[in-house]
Image (cartoon, rainbow, N blue to C red; front, side, top):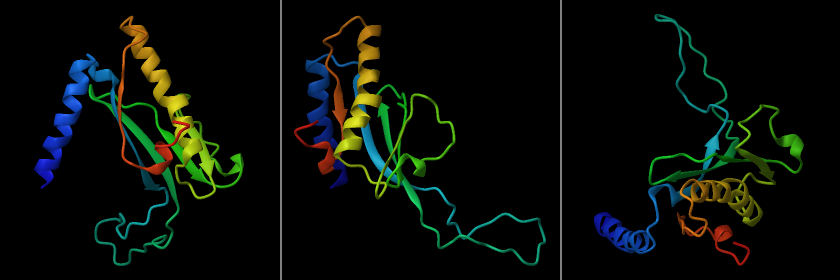
Length: 156
């Protein structure tokens, strides 16, 4: 069954790429994933032979959402990181690379607004940069994403 799904997907994507001569750097796959940022592992490191090893923090399940994109050529695009909170104060003071997009929502989940921001701040700059480098401002790109409802609105 999985093999059939994979073949069906490839049959749909390949003609689009071929018909529009889309370069590998403009075939982009992206998805969001929850990331635990406080270790909740039940494993720990200790000196060899230690008799007592304490493990703490196994109940803490705080998460952020990472929105990752990669091109068919293997290039990872900058990441969108979504924290949980109502104001910018919930975002860390840590200095992320300037190409990253760090934002927040009340529950750290992606929504229509963060999806639009991802397009504007991560995807479109990449697409425009590739178009400029190949001197083809009208070159089509192909974005592969899941069916998450926030990505399939009139706004996008």
